[in-house]
Length: 143
Image (cartoon, rainbow, N blue to C red; front, side):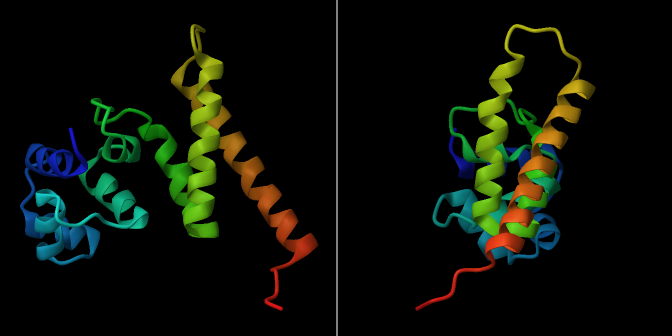
């Protein structure tokens, strides 16, 4: 299923009109219509807001092969935090880091609470390392 189909389906399941979703995401209703028709694709930050408004995961919206609307939703808050502090690249880095480390839980017995603690610690370590690097090396200057 495509992004456009998922947004429309999730919006209807949430009982929202296109205008209500537009208001929640702070875009125009024309933008929502275009997203649902596949005529336009939102920026990653807007995808995060759509996911929050519709209570579906970023992964569900961005991965055409994902069929579970709440798959990896517990990781979304960490991705949003990284986006807030370090922009799109920070969000992509954390998303990749969390995805790659999820394999550590394959076949094991671990509670969701323990997974959440692990994801939180991993994200905090990433954000701290970015902060240290920024302090140590500063921003690159154009020459």
